[in-house]
Image 1 (tube, rainbow, N blue to C red):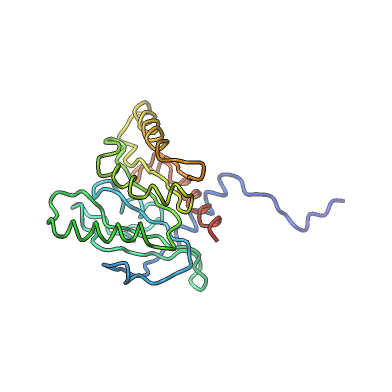
Image 2 (image 1 turned 120 degrees about the vertical axis):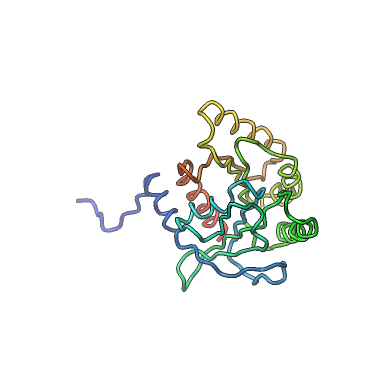
Length: 230
């Protein structure tokens, strides 16, 4: 009779997604900072969420972690004014961090505040050593705006060398029909191809915080990033 005392069977796709969602659910607030030097040094892989102020960034984080108010989701865009760090994994042995970065592009924010937030975000994306992945949220109905393209150019070097992975989430996908959703994904893939090299790890996914489209796939992708970075 075969020895079945140890089962090394890989989890099914559905099981892998459930495990990743359970991991994401462990997210808890760690600290907030208005400058890069206020963030704690860490060896844990860090995944940053960035996007225009009305792209649905906070809602995506809350749905991904299955927590209603982990990230502050306001009806007034532009309310995230600091870098907010969230810790994941067991409390006595955390294995990753999520970073919620200030949104960009909201016209009603005072110019001085905009410039300060942009500098904080730029310093983080360019200099944070523990940064392992970036989740860029883009409204699927609008596609890449000029500010989104500027962001891509800014992170191109770190993504191009393979030191930082990139996942573009086309948010609010529930607002599009199937044909338009497919077209939005194709357009994003075409644009991102210009920023990819042999070392790049770049992905695109349609996502909806309302319908939860793409939720399991995204959680699994981020979990795989963390596993590979450790």
